[in-house]
Structures are given as C-alpha cells and as structure tokens.
Image (cartoon, rainbow, N blue to C red; front, side, top):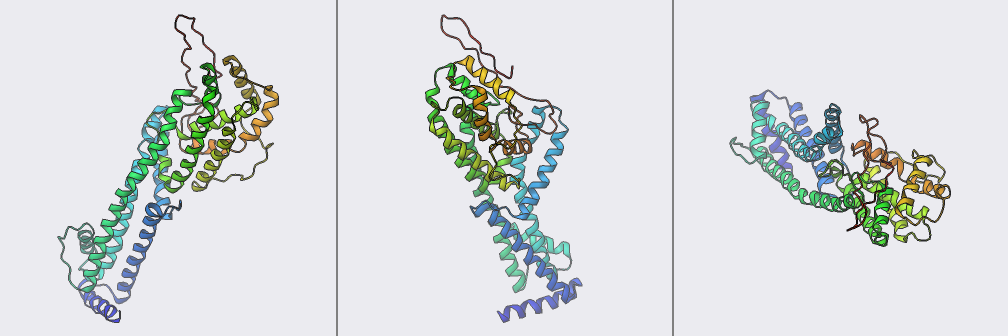
Length: 395
C-alpha cells in the first residue's frame, strides 16, 4: 500500500510539470474524482440493486427535473389527449436519463483522476472516455493511469449491464399492473368509476363474481405496493390507452368495495373489506416514496371532498340497475365516508401529480379545470327483446 501511494505521488509530481497542476490541486482532483465515483456507485446500487424502495438523492434530482420539464411541456397542450401524448415518454426518458446521468458523472470523475497525468483537462476527458467505453484510442502509462483505466472500464460496463438487467423487472411489473386495469375497462368502462363497477355487474347478474374480483384486486394492490416502491420510475409509466390509469382504477375499485359494504352490508363479500385495507396501505407506501404528507390515522368524521348529494345520486342509479341495496343512502353515507377518508386525499394527490385521466370521483387535475370523463355504458340488449338503457350519473 505504501508503494502504491508512493507511485501515485511520484507520478503526480512528474505530471505537474506537463499540465501545470500543483501538488495540492492533484490531490484535490483525485479526491474529488473518487468522491464522485462513490456517490454514483451508491446511487446505482440504491436505484437498481437494493430492493428496499431507497431513492438516492442523485436519482431524485434527475427525476424531479425531468418531471418538471415534462409537466411544463404538457401544460402547453390544451386537451387531455395532448397532455397524455407528451407524458407518455416521461417514464422511458427517466430510464435513459439515469444512464446518461450516471455515465456523465463517472466520466467527470475519471477525468479528474486522469487530469494530473495528462497535458490538459480535455486530454484527461479523452483518456477517461476511451477507458470507460473500452475504446482504447488513448494510450495511458504509469501505475495510477493503468489502475484508473481498468476501474473506468469496469464501472462503465457495470452501469450499462445493470441498467439493461433492470429493464425486464420494470416491464414485468408494468405488465402485471396493467392486466387488471385493462380487465376493469371491460367491466366498468374508461376511465372506471366505483358505482359503475357495481352497476354493470348488477345489470348482467354477475354480482356473485365480485368476491373473487375483490380478492384479485387485493393481490394486485399488494404487488403494486411492492413494485412501485422498489421501482418508483414505474409511477411515470402510463397505461397504453389514454383513459386508463392504475390510480383511477384503484380508486374506482376502492369506491366499489366501500359502496358494497355500506349499501348492502349483509350481502357484501368479506373480500371487499380486506381489499380496501390493502388498497389504502399500498397508496400510503407509494405516497411515502413520493414524499406526500398524509394522516396515518384519520378519523371517520374527517372531511372529504365527495359530497352526500353525489353519493345519493350514485345510490339511486344503482337502484335502477337492480343492485340489492339494504339500507338508505343516508344511513350508508356515514359508513362510506368513514371508508373513503382513508384513501381519497391520497388518490387525488397522486392522480394530479401523474396527470391521470380525470374520471368521476377522482379529483381535479392541474390545467384541466372542469374536465371530467364519465365511462360510456353500452346498451343492455337481449336477443328478441327490447333494448334497455340505465342512465349513469355521469350522463
């Protein structure tokens, strides 16, 4: 070890005469380069390797700035479809941004290390780039440049390899997320709405499917909490269809479960209760990653934005579909309010931050004042019979 430091000192002293870097500056440059390597390595490990939902400050810096740029660009679009087209690229660009950011900082770090041993800083950049990307067009000599070249090559290849290995996990989690979101669009339209979920199942006499459906969504919510906290970049990935969104879909299913439990408490499946708890737990974990403040133990009487008039209108619409309501809307409202207070504010905040499609009961969106999309219900037809149509609240 002493011989290595002696070699570094002797080589640095010889290099000073060629590039004009003083002894103090030599140590400062090499120390700064090593510090940047450590910072970048920690960021790569926390983002790509450690499965704990840890977000490095470096990755967070890149995410925030890219998100700000995309929001600014989307703000220029006047329609939701235009905003969605722009924001579709945010997730992939973030992945590319990680790679560019890490490689750029590593290039700067190794350039600082090579600087005392080259004629100028541009020459140091060329040597570092040649070593990092294994191009080999700039020869190096001396024990320290040789060691730095090997380390630069290993660092560059490792970062690229880890990023490539990261992609299957990202897209696998994305595909798992979108399966039930797509299925819900066939059962409740797009964007989905809680009362519409129950209404369509009641119209076709398939309320008996709801216990398993709620069970599937409970497992989905658990997977969402695990995947979107471990890989926060997934929050920037949008559904393939503009009016689909994981957060709006989750909100619709939470409302459907809460409506079932409060309007028909004796018939409601127990799976609805378990799903609601898993649903708002997953939202809280995602909110923690996004640095969203929330009350971990809200009171059932705490205020919510949804009004009793909106709730009553939805209950009356469900009556038209044949939903087996057991209590009056006024009686059910207190219980429904107590359920919704656990997730409403979180859904609204996350939906607004991600510019999710503004569906019914899903909150406002910045830049889309007054825009609300209601699901279009298909005509209810029978072979040889008359066509019936039940109006939804959104019509």
